[in-house]
Image (cartoon, rainbow, N blue to C red; front, side, top):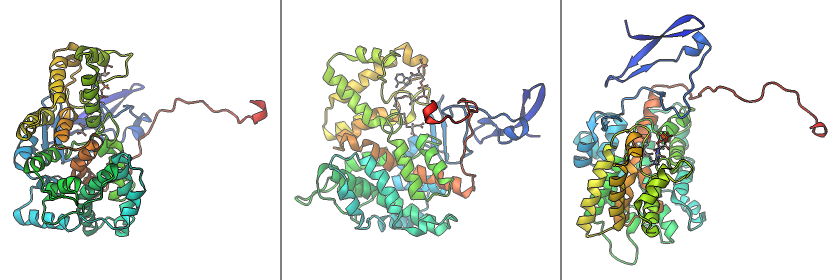
Length: 428
Ligand code: SDX
């Protein structure tokens, strides 16, 4: 007999089944609650509500654990290649040599973008934020592939779309950057690996010979792996709910890009650097800003601090903090912003306001410092997050689709005006 819990409403007892996951997480299944009791639950922001079961990513916020398909993030970040991790998240297992080779070749051969897309890119103002370009371009690019609209989602069509998305998003991202800096776009080169190709499209210029720096390429590979998935976060939940209406994968990923853009989510990596630069230029010392962050009357928050799930350390932040030191040392860069970040972390973690609320550096706190060292401009930081999160969004959408989950449609508790009659405008 599986475990149940009891709910007593108007002196009547209802039994609700308990769902237990492979890591012993427990949930009360309320899928029949309204039919049985007429009641729904209310949980604004879904802080206590599970939207689905999932076999993709496991994280334990108290213990600072993060695993993709059971593999610890620390091992994947240290030893794996980003496309290997993408395959793992999407198809559930690490690829064999042949599977990896086929996957990589399929992606390499789809990196070009239809030339008609250039018309859209050139129409954007020079200072257009690249996240706006990326979100719009993903929806636009779906119109070049009508077969991707098939709501029955045949496996071959989905695999082709997966290859096209993984292949074209780096090209779109690099072209959005080139558009922002007024430089000519650089076409993908099949001789390069995934991260090498992106670095080349970002930084090479027709005027001179350029070859991607292995330190930059390796740091990018690690950062993309660390951002690849994070279970039911805001943007992944957006991708799932958009896909649940049978919208195509391009449009669903485009909605994920838009959700990620917000400064409370992926946009935080850009906001962290802007905050650290403001603190550095202000010269007013750290305590002024720590106190502002604690002041409920002040809208200022320590960007890159806090997390909905991690109430201890974010394992990704620990890895990225070390990688920041490594990359800057290897590149011979001394960045005062990194020193300020470390001091800020030190002061905050000794302050009861942050400790009592479980506010620690999250994935966004140090990542921007590495992007700066790689010469990636601040406005591209969240695009880098999207580049990493792409396989996670695809994996979440594919799992939702393969399980034929119903269209997402939450309920509400109405608190507005009760019934009233229309009044002619002359009588209002
Ligand atoms: C990402 O969900 C994911 O997995 C996301 C992500 C992923 O990989 O997909 O990990 C990526 O989005 C990381 C988070 C990036 N965002 C930021 O760094 C923005 C700054 N952080 C906060 O805005 C906040 O911590 C959130 C949005 C991340 C989490 O917000 P919650 O869970 O809704 O927590 P809360 O706002 O209810 O805060 C609880 C308390 C409040 O104080 P009290 O009401 O208890 O007095 O902590 C305070 C908040 O005011 N607080 C902060 C703070 N974050 C929370 N106070 C100062 N500075 C902060 N950064």
